[in-house]
Image (tube, rainbow, N blue to C red; front, side):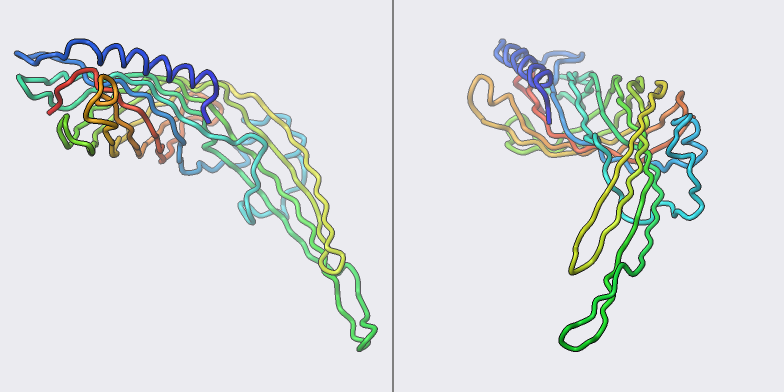
Length: 298
């Protein structure tokens, strides 16, 4: 899922974290913030769909020839959705942690700060129509009985709004387990915000027909339009939660490294674009590497 650019970023983060973890372990004395961990996360958004309407399409796809047809006989969201050509979704985050409430030997919760990127398809609109009719009549040479060969004609219109989100995020994470535990659980609360970029709407029309046995033939045609949309802003609140696994209890680097799985339910607000202000419930599944920047953790 991650391309060469993301692979290079991961190697760079791990190299920096390895150098940091190899330094003299920090001793907690007195009060004040201390370093926590460095994080690199990647995964998939899981947003609930934000339905579009014909009024939205006039703003997102102005001048579309496909939507100029008579659509009175079509049904909204009737039938199976068909995918558009490029619907991959992905999310990445690069974070660094601090313990702002460290007191003596206790670190307290970790404040994670960093950058967030997501490629998402939060909005869809679909119309579907299907009709069936007899295609031919076969007569049995054995019994003389007649059998009708059925045919089905169908066509669908679909629009999908696609966008990229770039911005920053901050989360306060509480962790169960100490620095010597192999497994640890964590949960917390976070906020994020930034810009919506590279937004566009794809409109597609597919039509076809199929003939039943004994012919078993079918045919499909496809037309597509793409419209660039203006940018906007986004803001979110989320609840990071997950489980981590420490790779080793010994070693200069591995004892500082965890692999972890994080799920973050999210309330996302989009605004400043052709859709106006919209709210989407969703989240993301993220898999990541965590590297402690200090030895002690309580």
